[in-house]
Image 1 (cartoon, rainbow, N blue to C red):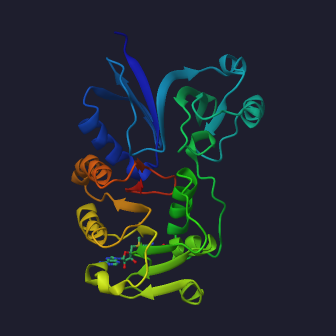
Image 2 (image 1 turned 60 degrees about the vertical axis):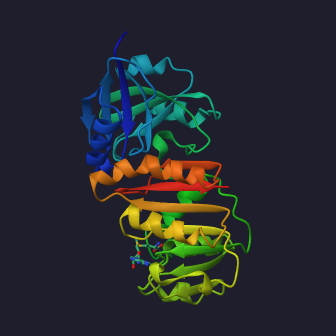
Length: 304
Ligand SMILES: C[S@@+](CC[C@H](N)C(=O)[O-])C[C@H]1O[C@@H](n2cnc3c(N)ncnc32)[C@H](O)[C@@H]1O
């Protein structure tokens, strides 16, 4: 069988973790050409390729000359760094190209001046409809933390069916970036965190701060039904999962959205069993996604 090349677009801070994931999950893949944020791999036997620790992955068709790209009828263009100036024809082509869910996207990846690479991937429902899976969330100057963008991206990618005035138990809520986004969606937020919340969040009508560590809460702390559990607690995934599992013995949320911190390589091996355990708990859609605003972390979404 012919060898095949694959590409990944990722955030530079998570590249070591992606390489570790490749060595565990794709042992027959060899690192080939790479630049910060862009890594290619070669495999002798083509197989499904969908690593977690990257924004995007697909088949790599190699480096191309501009003349070869000008013949494309439809393609998106991604730039590795914002300061790059691509050929205007490619910008026009990308601007007018639309892709449907399930369609094969042709992606031109500009790595440096006149340095174009071509890739292909199938557009999934959970993909952002942007070249290179860059965040489509607009900057919010009021956001107390980066977590505003993280939950906004999860909301968009998974089209989370959150409804007005539903109740969210937010674990690790300080200083309040995610709370702000959830409050903007007209949700009621119970923020659990021993740390201080941003005073602007504390003033919001639909926010209640439970200033405690999540381990100290039990069913007696909940008089109301909780519709969603969101976590961004900066503790190992094993601790977060254990505590959320405990909450699931007395709460029945419609969905769970966890940002799991992967500060050690060994946490990678926990991800598959975690996905399986959520499926066994009766969640019908359970997915992992690396969001554009992420560093060494991954989003687990489990919906009933
Ligand atoms: C990444 S920050 C959360 C950012 C926050 N979600 C936001 O939107 O601004 C992690 C938070 O987890 C909190 N945390 C750590 N251990 C905790 C625990 N045992 N119970 C609750 N929160 C905890 C920390 O105090 C910290 O505020």
